[in-house]
Length: 259
Image (cartoon, rainbow, N blue to C red; front, top):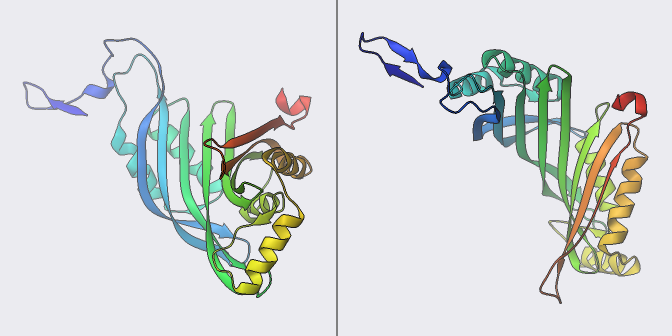
């Protein structure tokens, strides 16, 4: 933000002192829409669209931040989303805004061509994903979140996964973990024989939120790259006026890693 002084020159109001001397934890822009390229296990990569939030910390000495610089950094970035590229974006934002901490969050649908369990006919199903990155003087951190619908005895449930990792892992890995933890996966297109298979399969292994959250947590605990996770399962009840949920959060880092 700038104002025109009496001499006609532009004054940088944002860099002036604030009348209320309080640090701001995070300030920035939200819901910036842009096309995005994501790694795809089967095809190498896929094109999707993301809603992006970006922010930095703001010391008490400054009145405001320069919002346009977030957009400029994002326009110049225009890269495939991965840990290395997001780290470059975080570093650019941190430098441009002269901040101690930078933050960026990508929210996007991830599409999978999924075959029906009996007929094998493929159809597209989307999973809502979020990748959050933060960078400060201590280093960087990344959080991947995936929402996976599954069948349970309720019969519809949603699994919310959040993981921090020490190395690259495919989004599909976590989708498959979640789908294997319920009574049945959910599909977009089902023929009659598929409907029969799904129904019988779900009835053969009934699960409740407690079962599903433990199944997912066990699989995440055994994953070679997962260092922290939070999994929450919510079942949309059909015979009650409320939903049911269960949640497990675990830090799998060693004491040396936590130090």
